[in-house]
Image (cartoon, rainbow, N blue to C red; front, side):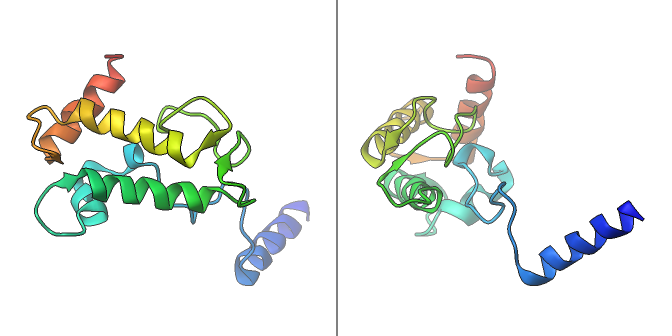
Length: 132
């Protein structure tokens, strides 16, 4: 009987559009986007790579989506520190969030072109996973 009640509540929650604390509707961290979807998600000008402005704009949209109380900073409740975020420091301002993105972009941009190819994104992710 308990399982039936739990199922009924879950169905009602979905039907009414209730959301869970996981905030599945938030844009994913850039590092969590599958490599196969990077260009379709971030390459707004269609030039085949992700330039600094495109990545920064995505990171900014993510910041504002996460900033639930609209205080221009993210605390640990709004965006818990994690391996896919730009900083483990909280609270973090939009300027610090963007600065962290700029630093990561520069690390990934191996050829200094100002535009990240899929190969550079993949190499950068692999280096981060390896602790480099």
